[in-house]
Amino acid sequence: MKRLSILIVLLLVACGRSTPQQQTAHARALTPGASSGVPGGVLINPDFEQTATDGSIPGWNTAQHAGQPAYVMWIDAYKPYAGHGSFHVTRTQPQVYGSLTQTLDARAYAGKTVELSAMLKALGVGPGGWKLIISANMPGTLAYSPELTGDSAWTRESVRLSVPAKAQRLTVGVSLRDGGDGWMDNVELKVVD
Image (cartoon, rainbow, N blue to C red; front, top):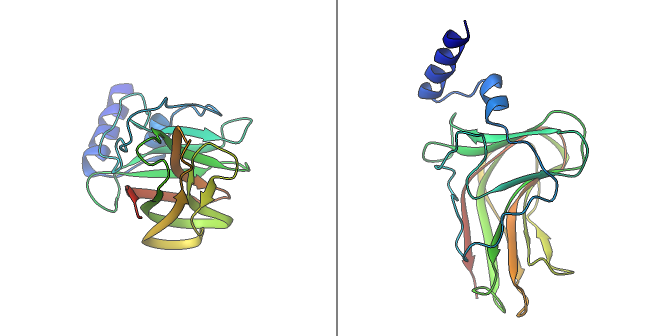
């Protein structure tokens, strides 16, 4: 029976559909405050085409405010914006936020204005919203894009940040601040000045 279940899941993956069982199998254990280290100034896996067998999202870190896991986060092969997959998060119980982030070496961006943009989609998101986040990991450098709420088709959202000259790390990502489902794909980070 177990082998039959595994075969069915594999067939569904081949067809590009996510089942609740896949979502659970691909959900990474959420560790508040997880850190990705400081890779170079280039985004890793910005289009979510890279996958991992352990359910993690290569290049990215999942986190939530605190307490028991309240979010399921995975690479979803069902109707991505482009390519084979997109990031998908759903809140399973009340919690302040769940986030997906990546930390980069900020030296390439120090003293410049950068823009983080991505294709976002929402389903049943409450007033807290689904939004992009960017921070130079220094006081006063946290910025959010306008939040998506309710239901929204794929749309490109963006947020800008003036990176302080002494910044060493730049954290970018997305945060679900209410109930519902959010998707992200085709993430871009560029200098705009």
